[in-house]
Length: 248
Image 1: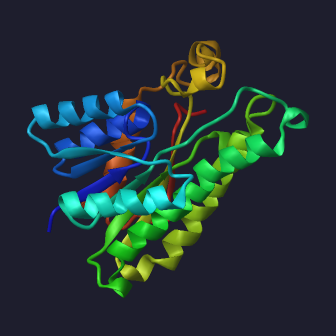
Image 2: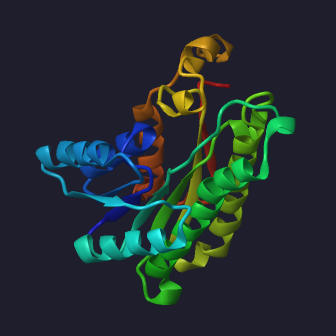
């Protein structure tokens, strides 16, 4: 049976690095994106140039219909998914809690939390032995912000990642007898463009000396942990949350 992976938010940063590495490990990869089709096509081109198989599929994980379509497109292209990386995530401009409105909170939670739940739902329907599947693995992207709280910056984002930690633990136990492993990776301060979307493009440089290893991380370093958790090398690992944060 083919190894088929969906990477949400796969066109940039950690998602792109995960997509490329997974393809090198033999997965057919569905590179999901919302707006930047060109970036997703670039990731697909890198994979195909190296002899792998990949497809760029648009869809906003905050929209249930888009998620259903994403998995249907993957089915048609490569067959049922055997690995899911819930990587898509957003944050807002840095704010204190008393400055946040409901629209911002709902936007963050619908993408970061609801999107991960709905993607997991669709993956389980295909992977679970309870539904006739042959098993699989899910990795959720959390953040060390779930532990640290991101005060004065992104408490809402941190809270959404706390929810991802709980989803990981609960879902891992729920499907443990159905051939599905569920784990999470908590990146620390990583060189990606998500910081610019929060209005602080130099955040890694500003904070890297607060990290015990005194440097920011690379997307490829996070991707290595994600892909390991999806492979048979991690066959007895479920419900785990691995920090990739330089000791922070």
